[in-house]
Image 1 (cartoon, one colour):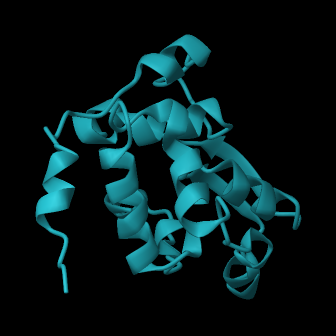
Image 2 (cartoon, helix red, strand yellow):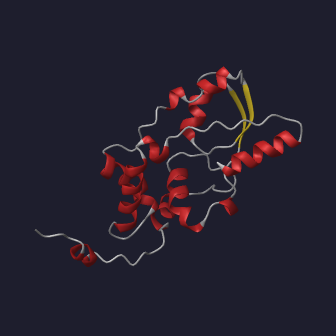
Image 3 (tube, rainbow, N blue to C red):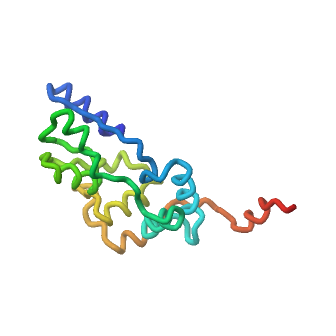
Length: 169
């Protein structure tokens, strides 16, 4: 989001028009609590957080991978009269497809620059690119081998600690 805002400002400074449309669909529209349950599941699963299991964790916790209804997402663009987007600042294939399927032309798809993706987000970005997000030049070549070897940081979570937190009547 901050990258998109920066790009909009830069575009406006060059005399163009930058628009940011933000939908509150945190955690694939499953809600904040579910999002944090998914994060905890990812961190505490056997072998730790991994790109290979990124989407599976959401399905295990919520029963589905995603509940966003992207078909409605382009409506504000149409309401604003947008017919062409020169620089689309999103890697999401679902957002891209929803927009172009309604007749809005997208000229350039801009990926998140690698230097803006923190080390802790490598699991997420690797999983998303492998499953269809726009790789751009920065993320080309993510294959199944890289998906399987991309792991998150170790938290030193000890399953025996769970027993210490059980309340007995």
